[in-house]
Length: 166
Image (cartoon, rainbow, N blue to C red; front, side, top):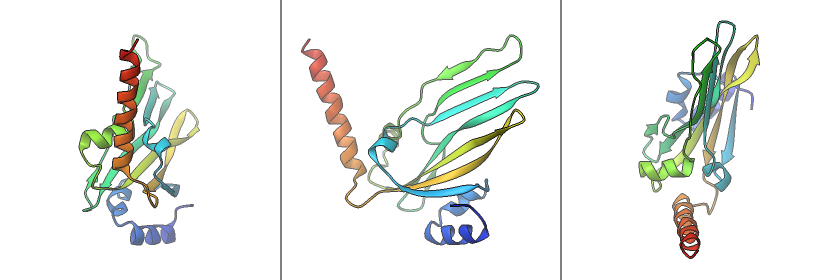
């Protein structure tokens, strides 16, 4: 949904934790979606490129919102690629972690209420990137993050068992 003063008022009424998150950005759009397994298995990214005529930056930052209203910012390790057009500069890359791994690493599987994704750098114009949108994700009916983590452990154990039988 397009973001304006009225949308903001309605959003803050239903999701009061967004007050702190929105204090840093004015998004173009806000979406509300269900948490699903595909999203939890995704790895957020970060990309930037700089030079005398270019300044590109895009990616996804993840916030965990706990039942008590605590906000964990930038809590998922992003995969990244950062580079430059300047001479003698190296491009750096790194692997990230899935959102599900981060939930387990932070120990918040039982207290996680919402996951907010800030997607930035959604437009590119004149060699620069700008703009952002937020996606608020909440668990659906009958959806259990702890059950997904148990299933992920079980699947990993099965893969190890298959490998060890070779």
